[in-house]
Image (cartoon, rainbow over all chains, first blue to last red; front, side, top):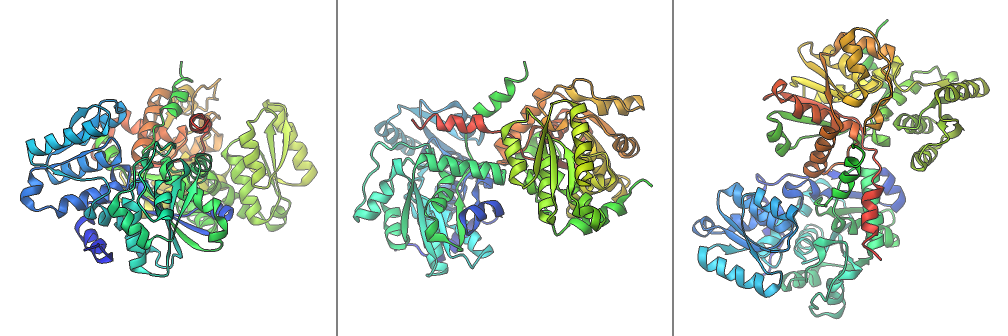
Length: 320
Length: 320
């Protein structure tokens, strides 16, 4: 049975004591630029710096106790791996993360810092999947897919639930789309709360499989995607696709130049750090202004995990 | 008559409808590192991105109406210039900002963006002062010193007032020191609210005139200061020095390497943008850990105006 708003409400009851209730920020200067009232739901302030912690926590807390005790596993080098590792540690169960051997050191350190056992594999899908299968049969750990799973979708939907509790009068909600976990959760929650609310996705032009799937009416896999949004490179999941087709009003494409400009605006005017994936929603709001004039718009800021080494290097260079 | 907590309370009544009540953030990961409970008073989220807007607004609203109508002037290329320009615009009066001809374009644009009339002068103190005098006699505008003025001190003290209203149980408050406006306001407010609270200043080792003044018992001017904290290069004001001598418990020196490390911690763990000057307070908390074990500590995060061009350039470089 497909999940509904009531599954998201239940997920929230399950995870509320574990997640941060993230703040909703506004910026009058950006409102002026856009000609609308924007409400930024700041999941960059969530634990592990991304909304992913919500879904991971919900997935774990939904497992039967004996199953949970055996731990969880996934293949990921991104925010989901960190989220799963921390959620497992907080519940006192092991996590096994399969990472490609060429993962950046900073990501390996982060996952290890949250207490996960890391297994490296060749950097290709086949190796990831076979290593994962082996890990599952060795440990009995549950594989937690990053987005194509109902407990994950319900968990990610709790960000929109909090936002709509704080701002029930929103006309529009916009979320980024990669695999589709956040978007499908957001859409189920929003339409379930208020059928009149418009739900849009923002997607990078260089990774537009959700857009092409949405337009063609059939799930199209991602084909050699290229964008600065490292969180949005994955292909849309089939479960996610079903919910998106049903609940999302439209998918808005933005290119990387527009995404960087929006990101710069957020850094300069709001003084918060967001990852490129998160800036897509503001980029879409600016690009498709005419859709949004004078509306109240909730923007899901998905995360704030971004490599700032080059910025700090510029300070270290001044020391000598 | 020296100002007291009651002047800060009055300043707050005057400016409360004009300033943002900035949030106070916590970060459990940083608390663990420090071994204390830190409360970050986020003036980087203040209008113009810095606490300076509080003092500027209070100074303007304290002027007699006819005087205010003639406008205000100052020489500055930093946050005070932007604060004064915006405060004047919000009150509908002119502002005249004297800037050195070699000021960075980004700062000139910011001040102009807030509606100030800019007059350029040679980049030396004598030219700044003579240009300022000419501007005052031409326009009748009031010169608003960036820190050595009681209305400015009282205005800057309102950040601590908000913080202590939200967290009356703080054991310690730490503020950065440059000219001393923020520190003296913070100290007057803190000791006036609770005489048992400890007030510390954080100062860059490469610009340690406040430390040397504090230790020697006589105001020592800044001598060729060198630090990445561009907001803390100015010499301590004599008015400020008097309050600091009276109310501040100690001045803690931190070097630029320590400041960058603290800044990195804030960016990575808290996902907020702060300027180097603001990171001094966390750097001091880390360096002098033994002073602060298990204490509740308020840190005044002074501002978030930092040039991130090199960071965004790294994204633009990926586009081609």
